[in-house]
Amino acid sequence: MRLYGLLAALLISGLARADAVRWYVLEMQGQRAGWMVERETVDGDTIVTTSESSLTIRRGETAISISMGSEFIETRDGLPIEMTATANMGSAPSTDRYVFEDDGVIWTSSQQGKMVSKTLPLPEGRWLPPAAAGRYTAKRLEAGADEIVVRTIDPTNGLEPILTTRTGFSEVTIEVLGRSVKAMRCRSLSSLYPDAEGVEFIDRNGNLLRSELKLGAVTITVIAADEELAKAELDPPELMRSMFIKPDRAIRDAYSKASGTFIVRATTGTLPELPSSGSQAVEVIDNSTVRVRRVVSALGEPVLGTDVKLLTSPSAMLDSDDPRVVELTRSALLGGPDDQMSRAEITRRFVHRYIRTKDLSVGFASAGETARTREGDCTEHGVLLAAMLRADGIPSRVVSGLIYAERFAGGRDIFGYHMWAQALIEIDGALRWVDLDATLPDSTPMTATHIALGVHTLEGASRANALVELAPMMGRLAITVEKME
Image (tube, rainbow, N blue to C red; front, side):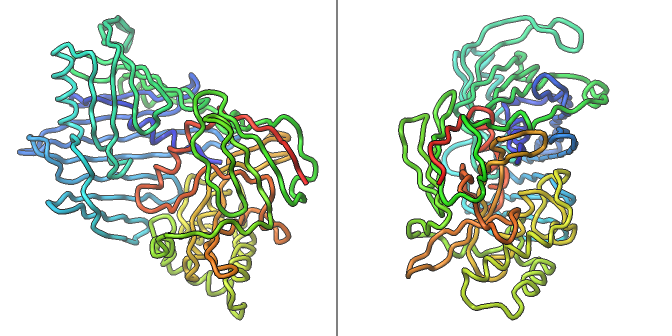
């Protein structure tokens, strides 16, 4: 049950330009949740833009802190040189570095002393690095533009350019650090979360003074501050129970049911496409409503044209080549059967038993971290299982979605956000996705109340992307239980 996409959204919520050093308070649901600082420095022929942030939220009674940072180096003419993103969402930080060459981008990811490196294609289309984007925004403001469209790259989101459109400019007066200042108010829309329109207040140089963005049920506010105010002691907001979804009726003996049919509806806006794979089939009713049918024993449709190499390769999160992950995989399957279906189920049961401390205190740990700490919640179970499947040569990915719980973290008869794994296994002569949930006991590899919202390989920067995709759905879904059998 994760909210880290919200943090990624905070970091790219439309910061137009930094002038030397600018501090910000981060709020969620009207409560202070952390801070952010942006710096821009000129170093010879280059401009360096850096960002640091810290966010603390509560999941039930458990407080969890997340920190992220980035650095972008560009020429004075706005040509990209390199960028770096760091994240500390588990017990060990991760770093992604991108070096821009004429014919590609050299990407290096490191975590726990392990390093993955490959050459990636250059981003498509025209875009501007952060400092150049800030200068362009300031010039358009000075020219009195009615619309400002900027396509830029933020290191925390990888190499996918983000298109931000600002419209509806009007001059207003707002309070900043205890004094009244003139600002330009505008509406802001980002390609990262197209259904969530934000409001920004910026000065004439394009520097952010305040922004407000509603992602799902969560309102995120960024407010200009000084360092002392930004880092003042805070009481973190609770952002898990508020995301629980209460269905129209309770489900008794939910995990014993062989099938379930649900109407999933977006209470506002459109509903993103939900995956039909594994034991899930999706029927679109209209642009905001689908019918989801889960059959525990279903094999799912044959999978064609899948990049099996990607699904068996190690990544920063699914580090299937980690010595401890490899050792655990060998131990779990020692003397086991040859068929992949049986091996996948044995691995699922092993992960369930192996993770001893099952709590909400871990941020977003890699498989290697979890293999050593033996603690975590659904995310750590799903990530470790997927990595061990890959270590055994079985293609895998993780699924983010919902699961029904009669009781969880103070909630009763609710759907909560969840993560599990899928294995791609040949069954009846065709490759098919098989759902596997390591948070469940030996007798229950899957339930009819799992609802998949997205599937992810967790390759490179897609770690953040996968979570950002979920954020706009949180708090704006309604579920009707149509049938349980």
